Length: 327
Ligand code: NDP
Image (tube, rainbow, N blue to C red; front, side, top):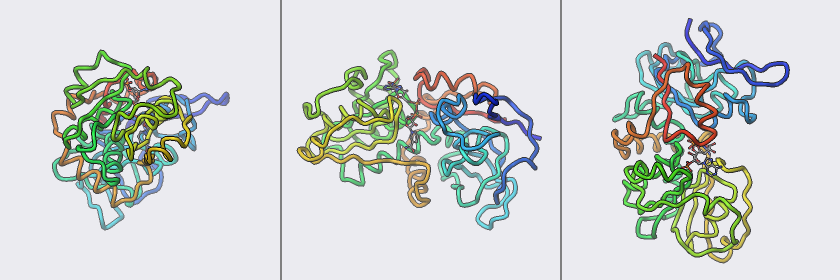
């Protein structure tokens, strides 16, 4: 038997999140059984746990879109008992039981060996949010953005994606500007590497379709009017990597910044990113993110505290990353 967070649906349609004791035999099919050491709470997990959005595709469901731990059993030659592995995305925690449990049975194709330089605890201080931040940085670099082009804006700065994006960009030599609704966290954002802080209200209201050119590039985890204002404020030829919807799913912009300033909107998806790109992203994270940044940016909680934390995360009250210790 092992402990898990289990989501069920009431006849009225409400989502319940309860601690459960499960049997290995109840786990879904998969070639590899993993003893999960750590998982995390991402924005999508909070949506799933609170039932605020249609994230979970079948019930009962063990949530948790990422996990790190040790292989316990494997029917696949690529993995053997004792191997350190991590997993993020592929619909785990949405359509296949996920990481917020002491055990998970998953497809071998979904697993990433934990890269040299990281352990399971550090890997989940990064988690899906941090890995997505790296995919955003890679999207900017793929399009030729360099520190010489000018400052880079990060929106949703205190969030999981935003905080790791700041740390990564600053260490690559970029001048990082951070947009936040929590100026009280200015010290933390500066410690991560931001040199200029922007009150998020100046970006979240409807704005002009073309504005003063301010940033060479941006990482946006917020969407909606914020992303529209970012597009309108990019320098000529600028690029924004868009991955999130913390403000909203809408994008009330126009073609003006695209056809008059030649900007690029680069979409970033972490869930089905191809394996080669994942491996590269995780290797770079292991090399480029200092361990002290991971610790100061991460809160660690036990499994039985996850359900209470989820609404706080959606309300934008959680700083940085939340790691879940499954011991
Ligand atoms: P967090 O909740 O950790 O961070 C979101 C941050 O956005 C908050 O901390 C807050 O930062 C800011 N924010 C919250 N509400 C609003 C609002 N109404 N208007 C403007 N800003 C707001 O989430 P994550 O960092 O984990 O994820 C961020 C987004 O990225 C989510 O929408 C998530 O679904 C998405 N995502 C997408 C992925 C993909 O594959 N495309 C993968 C991972 C995440 P502050 O207080 O500093 O203003």
